[in-house]
Image (cartoon, rainbow, N blue to C red):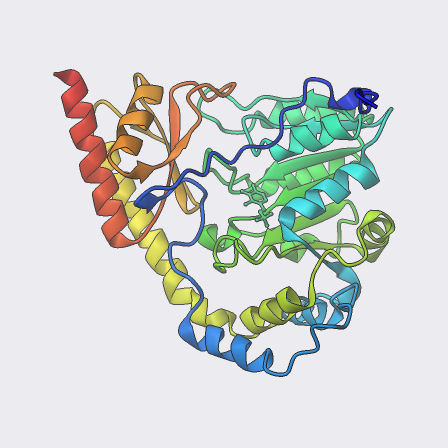
Length: 357
Ligand SMILES: *Cc1c(COP(=O)(O)O)cnc(C)c1O
């Protein structure tokens, strides 16, 4: 056959996700941890992989890892589900709570994966845009939830790419306003020191998403997890791929959770660097730097697309949002090592001065 019939209609007009992850000297575009795991953790993983049974299928539910995560978060195994990155769990959320005739409340600008998953699953999206300063329009979200037709909502805290934390009082009100499943995406919570985990017990409609990709330096491993009521987890079990979390990742994840205290100094160092960078960027008249509780900083400036290119030409890769809806003029800078941050600040200052002529 010289032709093939078309794929399903929902794919028309969809563009594959492009992380715009180009090679560069200084890679500060993807919110990764600038350092790999501590050497003790690496050694413990390699030890556990000696004589490993690579020929056997993994435990489909990664129960040893679930138990470690449950213990670390003061919940039970039944309240934890592990996925192939947080991204897989976000997709599973759209499969389980979305679908044709279902409605997802989104709070843009935010992580673009949410809207893409809704499009793929034929889920209707209700956007309640953030205000001009990127804070959540709390009254508008609550009013929309109160209409009662929203099946699920995602609130990202700290939000990617804007960096702000959702107010706890607002989230609690949202949870009490309707029975919509509310997923709080806490991919960056370790940098903010804020979590909704203590409210899981009294709110059946609260789910929390976490990842090992950021604070725990495992972006290359693909591990994320969900904390939720066991009745919510059991719905996710119906849509998940049975072996999505491989056996090696399960070992690595368990070793990281058991040694999580070793990551604390690194996290504190990133937070200190973030605040130091914010101070510098705020002192510049030609850059608007938004407050951040995460490991990245959103900045707005004139001709941001051209500035992005000039930075890249000088070996520094940041994330370009200058042509994204509601983020016009914005770039996102991931906090890197001290040396990388110094290079970013120096290069950005030089590029801006050159453009001024
Ligand atoms: C990075 C990120 C995730 C999850 O990433 P994974 O690498 O798939 O675990 C989820 N939500 C947000 C907002 C993120 O930035």
